[in-house]
Length: 121
Image (cartoon, rainbow, N blue to C red; front, side, top):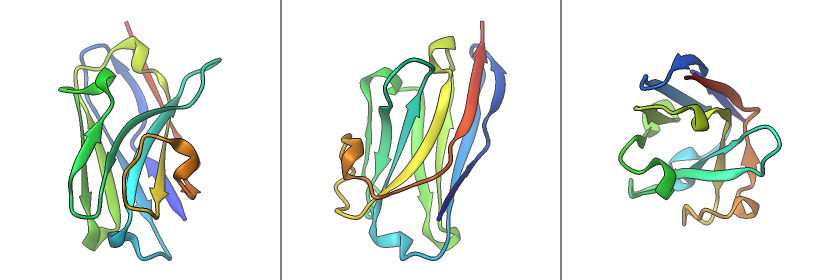
């Protein structure tokens, strides 16, 4: 089970840190990805982190978002800075049991319920 938290309303240029808490799984050996879905749009890849800690970010968030993990806490974080109105979306975390951290959402097996991020201009 995955539970996201940390979403909210923030002004453009602000920051938020999302958390993805896992339970009941061998979390440390899997990659975890972050995705987002804005109203009327398809779900898109944001960032991922493999079990060894290597990360991959979408071009749209490079230099602004950072993904990290604390396996002792079974938690993956998404630190978001310099937020823009176009970052407004529901953000989801998901587990990739292949551990590749691919941007393809169909590879991810387990998903959280999502947390809303709203960036006002």
